[in-house]
Amino acid sequence: MKNKHIDKQIQDLDQWIKNNSDSRELKRAMGVKLTLQGWNYKSIADFLNVSNGFISKWNKRFKESGLEGLKLSYKGSSGYLTEHQKKDVINWLNQGENQGLEKIKRYLSEKYGINFKSKSSYYNLIKESQNGFFQFSGEYF
Image 1 (cartoon, one colour):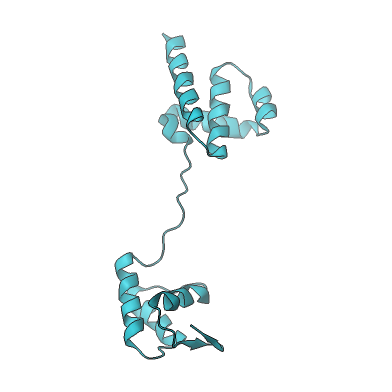
Image 2: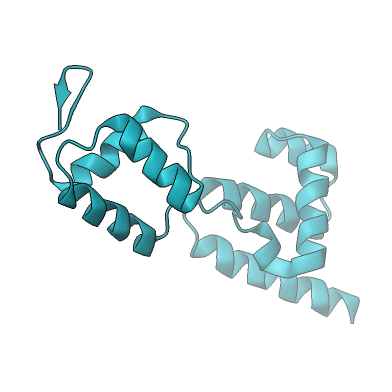
């Protein structure tokens, strides 16, 4: 019974490996597959150029969550503004004349509680508003 279960897991891993192009996920899956096939951690670590901790971590995740546990969980950061909020800010920018960076900062802070770390985030909103009449530090947008 146990061998059939392991064979099924290996078969599922093979199918997933065949249809997956992300090298990080492939390395995780290979580590798990080789463990299921009876390889020892040192041999797997040498073969895949990973640590024993890497192998242990992904085996544990696979046991807990199956193939889902091997997938990348990082999906990128979400923006500070929702699409609705962004449209509102762009509308506001298009209504004013040369709002100025400080006015834009104050508007975002007071209305949405947002303070961008970088000026480029403010500039990107200005560019998206397609209002070319803004001037900051000698630069026109």
